[in-house]
Image (cartoon, rainbow, N blue to C red):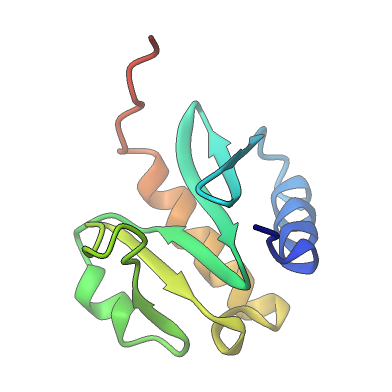
Length: 113
């Protein structure tokens, strides 16, 4: 399944602007951007996938365009989908990247096999 390349490019530009080292992995039918070997942010179809963590999760759900990430038909704790209404301008996208990078500092990396 294809993912929104325009959004992926916007994420790349934003992370490069901040001098953040990241790695891209295609997974879940989309693109996952890893920071410090941890899933941070990504693109699934036309949605931003934001890993914001559990702390202010309910507050983030109230933001424009945000909704539960229910990729597996169950909400994934700490993850949100954000539709284009919530990421279309650079300020909105920067906000979500800020939240994802902030949580990334405390997120635990998955164990490598």
